[in-house]
Length: 325
Ligand SMILES: Cc1ncc(COP(=O)(O)O)c(C=O)c1O
Image 1 (cartoon, helix red, strand yellow):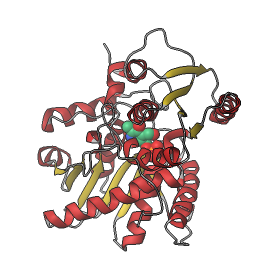
Image 2: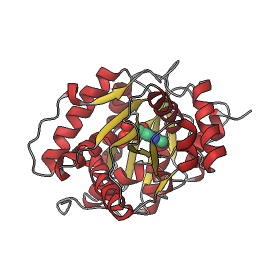
Image 3: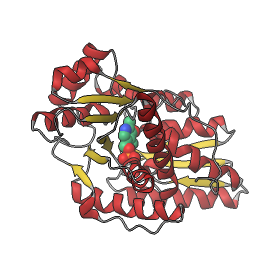
């Protein structure tokens, strides 16, 4: 299915799919399974490893020697892109949004260990940062270098192929376990993960509802983005299905005060998961998304007795910035 797209071998796959029984019985009458994409490897794991297999495969096939990307100061995507670049012998440049923090911890500490060229742009606008990355790339080209830009979150149609593949992987594992998956729940930050899962469900004809929990923008923004990425992603696989924004399920009531601002519900979800399963969630994405999943279960959103796969998309290094006491 993916043979037209060169892949870089970067992730430990398949990641485990495990039932989290103790946690499930604490929160309601459904069976929660956790897809452990926090174990993909690549400098402490996370969902971006799957996208990066395709994105860095493309970069490599184009002869790139320098990779540029962006994110917030605690970007997991930026950290994993820097690691991927190092694995492939390339130079990482991270153009991060916001002010340079006084202390470099969590993901930023890892960026430094990876020797990334980290630059800060004090703006609220990723459009401005993408423009800046374009300028840096032109300067590099004029010096004979071969830069390759990966947009925010790696959420391009090509990157989303990683989660088409993940969907198929989950279905294989569910078959082996003898279960039917009713829902897949994921944290939405730039939409590529959700888009890839949708395309996977569509192409394999499986009746699995993909539920996104926003940790950032309001749902309309993500419904548009995800529909566009999914439509273009399915075109890459020679399919002309048009995904419509109104068909994309995203909840935006769990963002709280904003992106990266940890609230009590998030801390409670992280703590409950740690104490029932010994599994550590992240503060920005998976902890917040899990607080949403818990609330949706309480509100009766999921059919009683149904099987829900929550994707642990990683992000644990940010704990050592956001939850430092
Ligand atoms: C840990 C983690 N989980 C989830 C996401 C969201 O994935 P996506 O950007 O594909 O929506 C991200 C990145 O944005 C992330 O770093």
